[in-house]
Image (cartoon, rainbow, N blue to C red):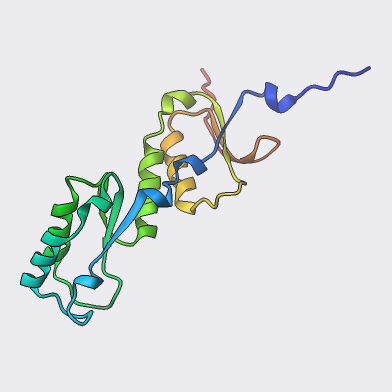
Length: 172
């Protein structure tokens, strides 16, 4: 009787799933300037400053906060800066832009914090299928981050991969 050999398990391939690096929606909050505008069009400095002093800032504690304005209005830059000054001491991070843009930014940051030593001289498969949609920027970021250290990068699943990069062999 022939023994079945799991060649994938013996190949030394390491699979990297990017889904855990995507920040959770519950970790992200939005600070929208819309409610602070007069008729959703005009920012009145005195009213804005008073409203910020009275605002419940505890809701942002420990969360990543995207500062934005969800309506078409001319908002002076200092208004975003003032909101950031209130958020900075309590939020995990403060970002100017939409929650989607912030999610991508945090995803890139999380991928760039991967310890490349764990993947040095290894054959790495970046998982390409899963239940969680992964933004394209994540694949570009992880390729840039790991390429200097790894033996090879592949995309897909260990049993069916697309080669992306292979370190040239050293010849004397």
